[in-house]
Figure 1 (cartoon, rainbow, N blue to C red):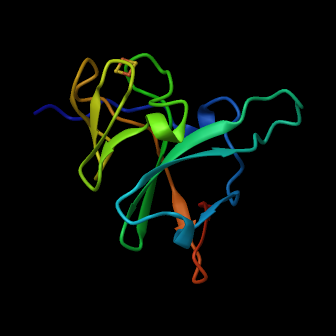
Figure 2 (cartoon, rainbow, N blue to C red; figure 1 turned 180 degrees about the vertical axis):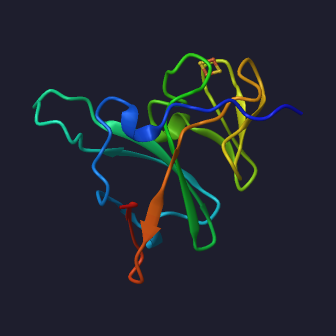
Length: 134
Ligand code: FES
């Protein structure tokens, strides 16, 4: 298998939030659940689009990826109820069904096989508050 193709760095994307931005409380995320979140843009523009990410919880660990398919750069899903995932195994794009590994966001099936979702570093405080890593 070839090495994954580097995805866009999350903070280079339009409307990326500032490091330290609050994301969620750990207790709000069900274990084994993929959860869509939108964050306020760091732009002052009132009409700036919010930044969308997917949170994947496994026990006390939470991974975050930009809600952006490596195939066409469109959201994996626009709404929570449209998000396709197998708990702790994979998450899929609902456009052409590329399937990404839960563990590292690498596409293992579909038109962008070998490419990757863009990871976002997180920090989790002792009280369970999750934010973008600083
Ligand atoms: S846009 Fe996601 S698989 Fe094609």
